[in-house]
Image: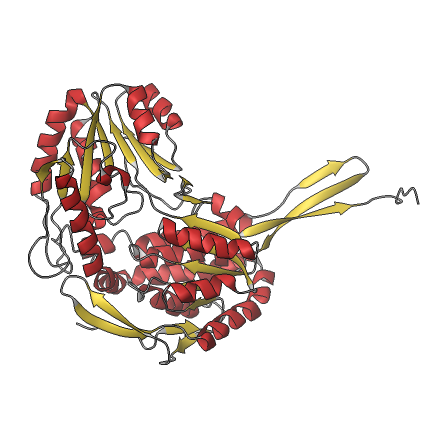
Length: 483
């Protein structure tokens, strides 16, 4: 089962290879088999990518926005036409079940391209009356942007970052995670087929050193990263040295608050989505599930029943509901957190270990009686491990939910709509849900607060993060000068 691309990189409208770069093996997580071998970008590859981006960007920004929009819309159409084959590649790259990748990964990317194609022609400025004189503003492209992707939603992230960047007249050099490097190359192919001029979307492979080199280059005006807090802190520091624009979507330890009057089935279903979808490898997951004591016993019973029915197996089988973790390293990390939770006294409700001897599969796991000080309530596990905590009062739940360095997401389940809005207003998180969880339409801004990041992706808010305002004062009379 191979998924070998024509070359490791896509630069200036074509595939490019330089075997002097360190080897990157792409592993299919369900079996551990090597499905592709790539090479890291050398200095020559990165120079070609940055130079072609800088060369192509000015002419692209000068085009009518509606012309840029037509190309993005064509790319969205191509993605939708090829979704079955793209979903299969995404499953091979990540290990996610194909029933997920068919509906959530590339389709979300196509939605982003379509959405920002629609926005592009509407982006304008304002006029400011000043008596005799007046001023006006225009929005300009930033220039060359660097996108750095994560391994959990590699193709979606490539689209989420490149769509607003390109729509607003920028160029992008994109570095996928070395763990899941394949989808971005297909996106680059699709952009060229849709009519995007060469150089505007380049893909270079590599580990952290490649990302650091891109972020530090003097030609780069903007950096957009999806990744861990530790990586974000390093990239933020490098970007700050060049006073570059930055968007960062980092980790989370998000809370879901379930009140006594909530719909039990909805709350259980959302908690499962917020912990087990993509084998728990979702940054916005609600991994601290606070359940009011009056509903706790029924919640845990129903949760155990529904979790037991989750079907693990071959990710290429459309009946499979949960696939493996992305790598053996991630498997070891998650199993370590499970053992720590047991040792610290959490009550194991279900799961609690590896599923089978082959592949990086972990049983969907639920711990109850978790306290705020336990490791699984403090640290991001990034696996199918749910921590259930109980609470008495609303004020207590809000205070404990906010007692974290993260602030990416939060959810509230209650039949009391007044309480729902009150609680959401008090929670310190950038992306929130009421009686729903982990729905992220491209029309809605996505991002976090505190250590979970800065800036926003998607929605109209993204326009401000991929463009800058120019103010122009227009004098309509003689200059009044005291000199």
